[in-house]
Image (cartoon, rainbow, N blue to C red; front, side):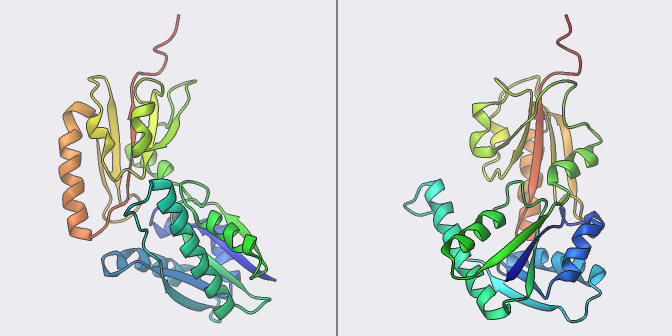
Length: 258
């Protein structure tokens, strides 16, 4: 039976790879490398750099493939993602049939951790549900962008004894600052933080975390919001892509003591 290794590789720093991840990559027969167009060749280059550093098995084959684009016209967000995942699962199915013998394994190098706002696992589950390609799979966790963000800013994730919410830019206004005292925001293409009006809110923002291009900005949200917007726009124009994340916080440790 074919086996798929879903390997978390962290946020782009090759030194974030775990020993478990390195062993999984070397155990594969095929490494599958996604291509997302010329503007995002850096993402594929990071994956190749990781492989060059750590793969010692010279028999491993490398297969590049194109990722279908998500179509958003005349569809809700949920429907567009559902349709997109279905297209990608068909691509995966074809790759497994064309490039893997029944007793071979392949590895995906997944940004960050496969269990946090990544859909590789969901898409593999679609492939198995169709039953055309019998396979098994394993997941190797990676350092998350949340861990990288708090490390770069030298802050704890949570206030003492208080919860943390992980959300998206689309859902941020539902919880912060009214419900969550600390909110980590991912997948924010609309820069939802710029719509938060609260003089006591602080933001810890980071882009390209763990790479040579890392940018971090922190401060009172009202003071640094415009700076983040300008910096983000400039960085995206220079690179052709951006991966960013931020933490919003209101309050301090021990500020609810009786």
